[in-house]
Length: 366
Length: 219
Ligand code: SF4
Ligand code: SF4
Image (tube, rainbow over the protein chains, first blue to last red):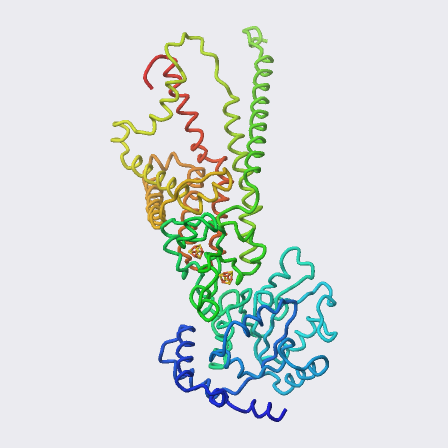
């Protein structure tokens, strides 16, 4: 415990040095971070300076209705890179998957962290919150809703990691049996950064943390609360298959010539044109590849309701209902009504001419 | 309603409603016209109605020299935006996918850069055509609400499509949803405005040709 406390007093720079990270690789990381956040190179010393001096902020991580994929993404995807060390260098005071303590000891750690850092700690949430029945998801007998409300109160800011926390995600998919909602659906009085993705790209999570550590502020967000630096451009706009889209060269199936030649996956249902994420630029697994590069269309996992977007393998321009049937029925109905209206008109005309009486001079003289 | 929900709605129920009104409306109006029938012609036929009628359906696509001379602008601009509309609607890959989904087969697409340029030309031409309509006293006199509505619902999908393609101002799901919505507006309005000429022109031309054919004169 004392060891832990003294670690907390160390600055990030000291921690990194004690872990054997050279200044050179630290600066390299700062440069990469600056370019990732679209900052000018002149900002690199500022970032380095700020990070050097940053004290490990307390982070409380709450996991609600989730699959642990987001935590997996963050902890497994990288070997010991500087990013993951930065992540090591925050004081993760509560994370029920990663922490050693369990049960009451774990909850006590959360409460202690909240009290000690009141108003200053960062709250990270993954998973959605069930509102239908609090019993659907509880931790130590506390409902997700109560725990979130309680922990959010003293937080400096909240980071919703993953699409479930950011937008409700898969639990929120129709028919949403648990009444799942996102963090921003129920918390209105705290700055919330949405870091969606199913799961989010690890460097994006650490990038957002770095921003917070460096500047102590919330990065610029888009209309869905996502940091613009990472979610500012659509997959489609940065996709390396884009030239094929523009030329009209598409893979029709997963194993045709077009697929082998790396043509655009639009016809296979690619949601790249409507999805904002950094996959096409930062890529996955330490920059190795990303889903489209591996030959699979984008599912749009960083967008709200991506699960209910009308089918993963249906192109965006395709209707989601069976329009062929609709057309046939509507045409038949149209013909029937048209004939009926026409026939009524004819009948009217016929009866009118039958009822027609000639006017004679005598009639007029009456 | 989130953007994705809106997009899903316009691709689903919204498109279904629009299709029903569009198809039902067109069929209704066509069959209403067909049901009017024609009075039996008591004069002796001097030629074939059918061949002359069919020929006229196509031959009227080419303006005769005197018409062209009289209204060169109207004819040229009309050609440009009609061909432009055809290219943009039927030769853009995402649109072809939509047709393929409904009718079961597709056809090759043009590169999106070509579509993009065609859309710009078509939009500009439509604007010029409107200006001309407003400035020409005869045309202005002959125009009513129907004409302006038809113009509006035609240019709207072009503009929303252009904006959606270039992602200007809003995020892509909203822009695409707005584009589809504008097409649905066009579909809903179509059968009840002069836009019906897309189908009725065939009947009208055939009828013109058929009368002449019956009389044994050239149409
Ligand atoms: S593969 Fe997807 S994201 Fe890439 S160009 Fe094609 S539609 Fe766009
Ligand atoms: S490519 Fe699309 S579906 Fe895949 S991870 Fe990236 S945003 Fe999500």
